[in-house]
Image (tube, rainbow, N blue to C red):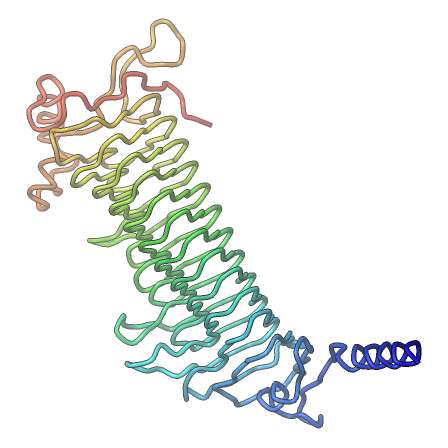
Amino acid sequence: MKQVVFLLILIFNLLSGVSQQPKRITVCETCELKSITEAIKTASDHDTLVIKKATYKEYNILVDKPLTIIGENYPVIDGEDKGEIIRIVSDNVTIDGLFIINVGTSYTSDYAAIRVVKSENFVIQNVVLEKLFFGIYLEKSNHGKVYHNKIVGDAQDEYNSGNGIQLWYSHNIEVSNNIVQGARDGIYLEFSHNVKIHNNKSTDNLRYGLHFMFSDDDVYTDNVFENNGAGVAVMFSKRITMKGNTFRKNWGTAAFGVLLKEINDAEIIENTFEENTIGIHIEGSNRITYKGNNFIKNGWGIKVLGACYTNTFSANNFLYNSFDISYNSKLNDNVFDGNYWSNYTGYDLDKNGIGDVPYRPVKLFSYVVNQTPEAIILLRSLFMDIIDFSEKVSPVFTPDNLMDINPLMTKVQ
């Protein structure tokens, strides 16, 4: 009798397992299921929805179970400017290969093309987003991947535009190989830790290519931030690594490649800052290593305001900047050692590759321009050369101990 009961239980479990195998559900104009919302309601956990090529006029699509939603040949989901388009509230969801347009605009709700809320282990990849308010918005969601998406906004004013990729209280996220342009901020993080942002291209955004605040232990590598309103803003964060990034052509009266404000214990390594009004604008940031960076043809290579202490600058190239370093204080315990300065005119008698005369990178004229911006019109005049020479002989306004005692004679490769 026991053997019969056991056999019946075994058969029941096997049948139950068969019935719970994930299914592939097709959505198309001529299929039984014609809408994505309807297909999600019909689907069981871990099913795959295959969305055929067509235009689906839907919004407020709620993904409330673990599903894989795959677009075939980029089907279009048109929100018709009515509101949010896809909201994910389940763990283990993958969105792949959709073309989403016409997100609604609101002054009270941050409508997004794709929003992920309190979810884990999600993947958003190969998605194209256009005519958006917010693009991809992660809210209190962890252990996810935002990969190989193209986000194209048409932001005109900050007050009625959103960000391309936004993370809020979201941790252990990988954001990689995305193209973001025409948003308010290309990529925005707030209270988001252990985030890896790699190989993205964030260009032509209204405000910042990258903007993050109160986010610790994040790593940014091999990204391009170009022609944004004011470059990249990094604020109130700790233990940040920025390596191999390019910050280019961020021009304007308040523009910079990178703004560092209240950043501590960070690494800025092997980045390129080229043709920005200011390469790096630093305020109240301490114990940062700047190594192997290229500062090329900026207005200011580095502009230091406020208390910035115990920073190290080594093996950097300062090439043809109007001002290499601007400094607004007489106090200095920062170390400049072994950098290459294109304006250095010293000599190397022992041929060891290091200049025999220390280099003072802070010019008196940069101090004058900080106090009186209109003086910039004298930049190429004899007046500038005279006052810089006098300050070099007897420093009065600039830190007398701010110098590179080992200036390199050739560029760091």
